[in-house]
Image (cartoon, rainbow over all chains, first blue to last red; front, side):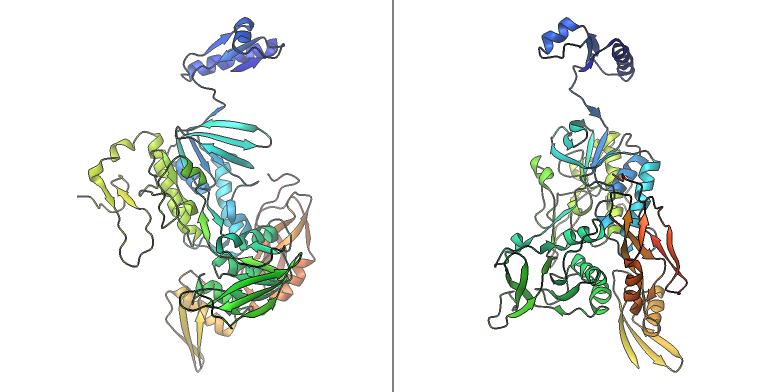
Length: 417
Length: 122
């Protein structure tokens, strides 16, 4: 319902009505003050008349909605999805790339060694050029099975958005101290590596001076170098596995180059400190990752960074009962990244944890194509159960994406006879 | 004299063996030509792309990311940081703006890698 408060606005109502009728909105009509009071007894006294849209309490209509993943948005738009909206929780577009200021991105996609912000810049420019809508600083409260999205933003308040297809691109959350259960005191100075990265590279705040990093994931390694460049002393990187879990090139350019010691087969077993952390105790582990008694060592430090894995952020996905694959932590997807629920797609780290942004871009591209395909009503003919292949895991394989392959028309290789 | 080098060009992280025979450097185990080139510079004149952040005023962002356009000498990172620490930029800054040309007298530019507008970037 749109309410007019003066004569000028009554004229606007008439224009809206005309627009609505040309756009094919049904049962659209303007009502006078008497009927208005009957419908809404608490209406403001200045109200003159109102435009009623009985079909829905629509605030904004979009064909298509996404959270983050600029690539999927561009691909969807290019493939004819119509109106596309990006909803982002952060204050700016670009997601995690904006805080990854180190080089090494885009070698595959652009053939250049770019930094994260440079990679993001290319996509954002394209988003602006293609006039794709976006809302930043917005939090999605709920998504319903009818593809309604409820979001909240400090400027526009609570909004309901009705969409025809949704692409999930919420990325990952970092595992915290709680998820690995490190005993000891609970002082300040314990950060996840990604949080520290954001504080240093985006907010311009330093996390500490004497740093220990637990876990040798790529973010942990990158942060070891970053903290060293920013003037901190990284005392050690401690890894429970017998090999570094990040890429070898990162071990070389982040640890070896800066002479930072890496303790493999070790883990932190205690945290000491009153207000601020002042010491960690770490110990060697055996093949079963059990602590070997008598191998404890101490390091004095004022900061502990945790780089102990990522969890796909699927709270919204689970709420509408989309099937989740336990081996990836993300939803089951087909080769166009459609989830078990029609019209809902997923791409990026929400599906599985990727090593490289270039691969994320490739897969987001497919998800965007898929969503455009769905919005244009072409997906239905490909739901033939006889033309569906489930991929089963062999021995020694932890996870597979996509889990289902369907006979979509733009597959490179024909796998169906 | 032989030397083992972990290639940092791509995620494959090939381990490349380099041998200096006379005036020539022979490489073994590289996955591509870029790796071969990297291994040779790594044993003769090791270089890295340097990235960091610089303070910025007049914007709601406090720092802006910067990088060197080409790799600088590996051991020069402390010198680079010392120079960058003293810089302060003022918004707006264009993407790719050169802050220091001929950085560290190595014929390389230091550039901004994020577009920052005045006051409101969000």
